[in-house]
Amino acid sequence: MASEPSQSKVLPKGYTFMGPELFVSENAKAMVLDLLKNAEKRNPDAFDMYVYNDFHAYAIHDLIDKTFASIKKMVNKKEWVEAFYAIEALTVFFEFESTWTTCDDGDLTKLANKLYGAILLTILKGLKDTNQLSPKKFPNLECVLRAAFEFGKNMEGIACKSDYTTACKAIANDLFKDTMTADRALYEARLREYVESIEDPEEKKELLESLEEYVEEMKEQKVAWYMRGKASKPEIKNVNLQRAWNDYKGQAPEAPIRGPAEWDLTKWTEEDKSPFSFGNMDDELGI
Image (tube, rainbow, N blue to C red; front, side, top):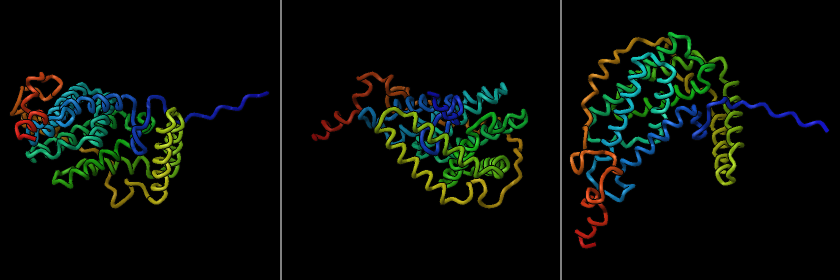
């Protein structure tokens, strides 16, 4: 009896999903999970603590600061592919973590957004100049551009100028406008392949429901995000990354104003944590 032909795989090696709209590289996913793990270590609620109002927001700013520094080193070395994975990871991280945007220093948040845009555009230009800015090199390129575009638009909602959204939209429109229908079909096929690979029945059921909701939503959208409104030329202008870096660097607090000089709460001793624990606060209030 002849065996049935195996179904061809459409999900590229080294790529996965972190949600119906988050098609990510495995490289970026590993970085995102590490960032989320470190972010949790800086969340007082996770330790039943209250330190002060903006402790968590500034603790995440510090984590972002360290990530910026790491990516900038890659950019300085012109390690464009590695830098792209890293900025992809930071962009996806912003999908999950927005606490940092609520700190009481609005100027710091604006400078962080400006630096993010400068780094992103420098990387995109570096890839374009070396003929690597394409979906063949990065199968999820459109997803990364969309995530960066949406992040920028969200930041504009809190008075943060996000010029990089124009370039993201223009690049995507130039690369994908002629293949939108085929791209959507391929994306759905990749998403279905990923969902079918999930072994846990409950998780698979939830993902299937999310998948169908996503597919229906896409059917209602006649044009892609990059085709809405006026399209600019797909050029990436030179940005002054060093100026954005200099404007930003040193603005974020290096240490908390209360407790030990450490944002990572797992590095605080029990004695350090004690004055800030909910339990001790309740005792002081007689609750």
